[in-house]
Length: 136
Image (cartoon, rainbow, N blue to C red; front, side, top):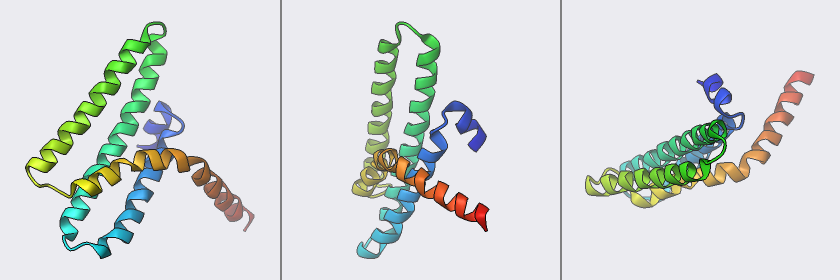
């Protein structure tokens, strides 16, 4: 699975790892402060799953647009709008069937942004740990 993501985009495995770590931290910190723990957790899981799906989709679209070459602007725009329409549909279905907390689902989707911004720090920490392990 990691090799597939790495072939698609070198940064994708780190981005997905960051999203998952973000989700674990938000779960461990926030679950103690809410009354409805099940809806909190399911909302966060749906949001994290959407964030991972969006990250993979973005990587696929970047790869396809590089292959298309000239005239890829309309294609990128269309796929971006479709990605957010799918996200809106997931949120509407989630609200209609009361599958989870909408607030935590949005917090989970924001994991994509947090992971993207924290990725250089994550790589720096992982390299330090790798070098420390190799030295021992």
